Image (cartoon, rainbow, N blue to C red):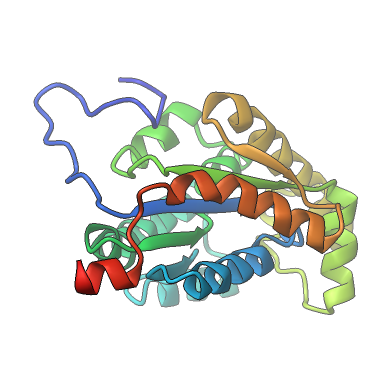
Length: 239
């Protein structure tokens, strides 16, 4: 068994159907600006005539309500947390990601299996076990990692006035009694996980602390090679 999610399926296993579209993933800490950049990217691609579909983490109607209830009651162990999110991701993949890919869309994913890997391993789950759990996930055409310092993540989170959740702060790990301190410690573990994936999984680091215009330009520069030979709506309709 390999711990590399990019490895081909095991002997005898049927490989997933080859997608016709492009799969772009954005990853990063909360407050990294990845969601904003993903939305801007979708609008940019649409303005250039491409068919685009976007999807977010924890968006499966099948499982998301169960995850919310479990989080609200503080009932999730690291393993349960991991399995529920894997189920959510599998449903999201089958219902939201693969169909538009097969139909020739450019699919933008706000978080992918990498989010599960860095969070689950930060919670103490075995890396090889988590890798295997998500071995069904197709390798993205490109994954952009929006890199920010943990303090920047915290500052932006506090400035947004959105409450820091129990699990977002890693309070279930008892890293600290104070919510903010626990957030800093847990997100530091998550950030270390992302940094390791830059080399092992070819994540492309983006300096998310740079001005928005610079980040936007870098994102577009990284995406443009994926558009070579990729049909626009006019081609799909009239070609």
